[in-house]
Length: 111
Length: 115
Image (cartoon, rainbow over all chains, first blue to last red; front, side):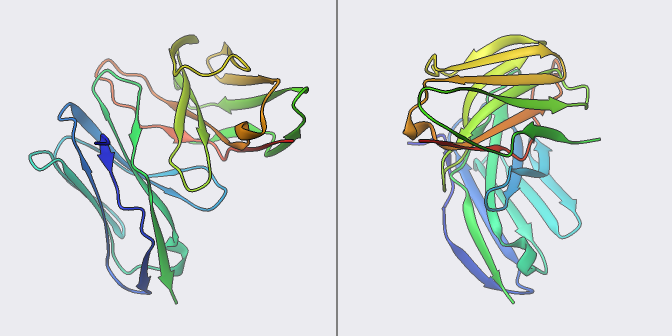
């Protein structure tokens, strides 16, 4: 079993839809949770960073962490064609430099 | 400035060549990372430097040799690479804290092709 599971998709939605991206994990020691967006042939861009459980909102993006279920989500409201990219979840434990990445979900937003 | 820069953007090299990848950050971060990413795969950690000392080496072949000349710079020296080493090489940095956590900022990457 992988430490972090993420459906690779692809996920195709119409413009304006609400997108839900998810990851599950098995290591209860993870405390830091990140979402990265990566366009083709570019480096990953940090979108959201959360510590422990709870919600965090930034513009059209909302990140949720449920440590009891070992489940994290990223919601994108009013999705745009420019949101078409691969979204990587990532997580790490306290005191560690090693970040574990999910496989990435490829998202296509159709105009 | 929340930017990590990498040079060159593209590199083509033969299996007998020696080349270097360079990475620079000016965010005052004390941890710097090298990752390798193949197409449609997540980044794979290669090396971590913390306070200019090598902290993690993920059993990377010796044909990859990292160097951290100072807290802002990170190099990756390449020698006798194989075609399967062709990939996007990503540099990242993070602020080291006693509590840990690794909110990493990535550079744009160097796309390496080994012929």
